Image (cartoon, rainbow, N blue to C red; front, side, top):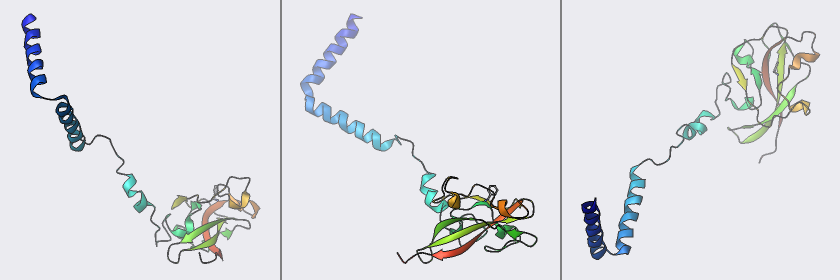
Length: 172
Ligand code: ABN
């Protein structure tokens, strides 16, 4: 192995005589920087770039992204034979309710929304949404959406949920 050691010693001495330490470091540095630009060094989240598009408010009141549904947990009555603020035929509106505050992107104002469950027919099963903006746990009952609000009606059977405007905030 002596020839091997001699060979590398010679080459190292030659390199040391012809290249200054500073220029050697500069070359190594530029090589590293160049490599960083060439390679996609870290993985990045391409899904995140679509996150805004996914949550864009919809004009369609049968879509969970419609602005009034920002705190609605349940089946949309607009998909169950009712409208956004009236229960489908054969069901009755819940006597008690929970409220949410949603911003209407059309005018930038905040609206108080009453989410009433419609009661008296089996679960609709269409257009299930689970939005929870400003929603609060069960000990803040009036802003909690994860219970059956048909509890005070003659029939406690939950069918779907409406979203009626009951108040409007000041112009911000
Ligand atoms: N308020 C909608 C709902 C009904 C039944 C069970 C959970 C949530």
